[in-house]
Length: 516
Image: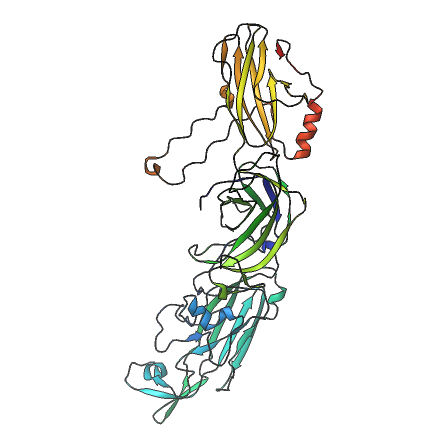
C-alpha cells in the first residue's frame, strides 16, 4: 500500500494518567546483581556462573508451588527464552493476583539421602562421599519498596509442602512504576548432618548466602485522556503529557510492552460541493506504535491509505499497550488488535471538542504565481495568476494592504488584475488560510518594468546529502514555504474568522494602485 502523509489537521493534547500507556518498557536480562541493602555472608556464584560442588544455589521453580502471576511460571519464562531456574525475566503485573514467588535452596546440604563429597564435609581434598541425613536449615530475607521481611529459619528438615514463598500483599498499593524485589537466602552453619562412615559431621562448616534481584513493572492505572484538536498542516500529531516515570533502558533489543494507538475516522462532510474523484475512501483506520524515545511527549502519525475524500472527519483514538510476549504481561484487558497483536489496558480517548477534524490529502500552498509576460506601461492593466493547492480562504495584499476582487470584498481569487499607476516598485502577496487554520503564502515584486519573484517566499535549497546517503530510500522531507514576516499562524477557525472581520474595515487598496 502506497505510504504518504495526509494533511490531517489535528494536533491532539493527550494527558496519560500516571504513565499508564506512555513508554516502551524493556524485558531486561534475568536480574542477578547483588542486593545492596541486604548484608551478605560468603558469596555464592552470581547468576549464570558455574556453581561448585559445595556452593549454594536456588531455584524459583519448585514442583510443589506455582508462582503468581503466571509470568513468573517456569513455562512462561522458558517460552520467553529464560532457561536458568535461578533467574527471572522482567514481567509487567497489575497487582492482582497477589504476587507470590516460591524459592528453594539447591545444595548438597539440603537433599536428604543425597551424596555429599568429602571436600564439602571436611574441607579436605579426598575421594569418597558421605550421605546427608539431616538437611541444613535456611532463611529467606526480602526487601521491596522500603518494606522487608524474613522467612524461616526452616529447621532440621521440617517438611515444607509447598516450599516457602514470598507473598507481596502490598503490591496493589504501590504506585505504578519499576520495582526490583531483593532476595537473599542463607544456609545456617552446622544445621545439617552428614554421615561419613561411622562419623557424623555438622554441615555446612560456614554460612553460605546467595542473592538475587527480581524486577517487574507495576501497572494498574488505565490510560485516561481528553483530546483537543489544534492546528497542523501536514500530518496527524499527538501531544503526550504527564508521562512518568521515564524508564531506564537496559536492553533496547527486546520490548516488554509498548504504546500503540488505534486511530480511525469517518467522513462527516466535504469542504465544498466540488465532485470527488472516483475510488477515494471516506474512512480510515490504522495502528500506530509509539516508540520515539527522543521526543517522549510527541507522536507523529502518517496515515497509510490509497486516497481519502477531502473533508471533515469524525476521528477517534484508542490508547493501549501491545507486546510480542503477552504471557510476560499480567495486565488488565488482554485482547487482540485486528492486526493480531496482543493488547492490554485499552481505552478510547475522548475528543472534548467534539468537532470534526479537517483532512486534506495535499499540503497547502500558493504555486505558480506569475505576472504578465511583457512589461506593462504605467496606467495599463497587469494580470497576475496563481494555482492553489489545498482548501481554505485566499487573501491578497498589495504593498501590505489587503485588496479584494470578489463580491464579499474580503477575499481574492486568480486572476487578479492590477493597474500600475506610477513607475515605482510594488509588492503583491497571496495568502492561503487553509482549513487547518494555518497560512501559506507566495509573492512577487512588480512595476511598469515587469515583475520578478519575491525571494522571501522562495524555499531555500535543501542541503547536499552526504555521499553515503545518496540514493537512500526516504530522503529528506521537503522544506515548507517561507511565511511572510508580518503574518502569523492562526490556531483555529474562530481565530481566523475574527481576523477576517476585523480586517474588513481596512483600506481596500494602495494609493498608487487601483484594483480593476
